[in-house]
Length: 117
Length: 109
Image 1: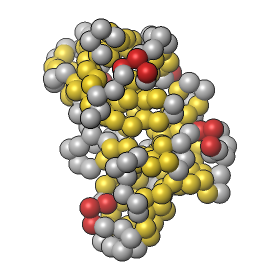
Image 2 (image 1 turned 90 degrees about the horizontal axis):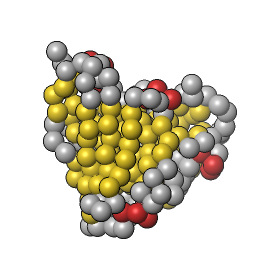
Image 3 (image 1 turned 120 degrees about the vertical axis):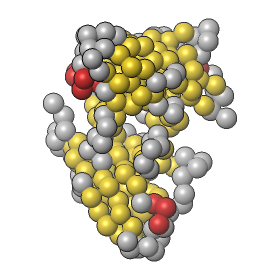
Image 4 (image 1 turned 60 degrees about the vertical axis):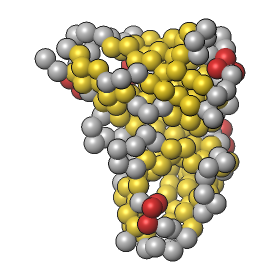
């Protein structure tokens, strides 16, 4: 079955970076894209960006331009999201989701990132 | 900055019908916004229900349906069950980016 498995929880200091991974299985990785979404405690969902696993094209939300980079490693069917210059309000659960042909269907289990001094 | 608006909260009785809507600050929502709908229960990752306006996944219960209604995207639940109590989010597409609505907290009472 299609599955996205994310890396474990992270605790980071303000000003540092975090890199979250998302390993895909059960489908042809390069035939789809991956979106990244976050959810701050008690808040709604926020779309961050997308990458095509086919050709590496990326699109980012304006709020994260210049601070986030999404990449893929097709040899391991893994997507990555790196967020830099972390602030306390970046504390959130970060999700990856399979995103193909305007269909955001399968989600990872989420990775908790805590930013605290 | 594009804003997508949903009802903050709705209440429905078991067995009843409820419609959640999703409006765009840029104007009418159309099929070209490729509306997606998600359900999220406490402590869980979101679960996809509907994609591209009205298409269901293999796991989507038949009582959920998507449509366009009065310039908005809509999610209708018919024959509501207690387990449908959850947060519901819509997602709209704008020129290579997606924007989530603020979510609707659905209470089944």
